[in-house]
Length: 231
Image 1: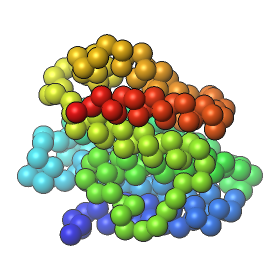
Image 2: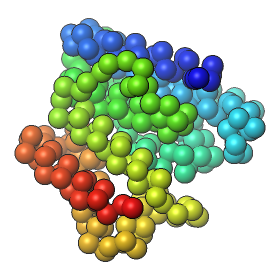
Image 3: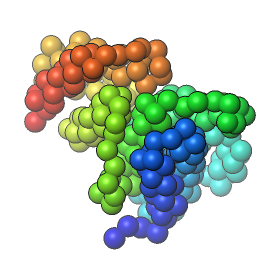
């Protein structure tokens, strides 16, 4: 049974999925706003939970109050207090899409949002929700990605979750080095492949690469290659 504190962000994500399924310009705008609201509520809810529920130290009441009107500050607090829990999430991605949502807010109906960007942000938000609350919302309703990037990001989320489950204790390393060194300990040949996949992911998520279907297939094959080495 789901915990009551996840209801708010979960409903926002389900609302976004409904509009994504409709696939109109208006629906994509509403979906993007709902996704961004879900991300913000997910982070705020989690950071505000009592220590006995969260199982880790968390921000003080003063820190939460100072972050109240600053989305980037909430992201900083999430990294500060629960870096391991979000090690499979690129916080920079969330901030980038939050800015896109702000552009939409100020532009109103004059801005067209590509479905690929909305699907990418939805999968990032779904992955964040899953990592923080250990709940896969796709078990509760039907939703299928229609774009290459949406399908790729779903595979990426599964890969990151599997990788994180195999990692040793984090220590003081940045998330990238933590993952890289672990893969190197299995087989040094995995490292350049992992770097290539990471670069591809970052570039397509931030709209810096117009990848073809062939490009996606090749990079997914490389993810499967790394996956096969994880035991």
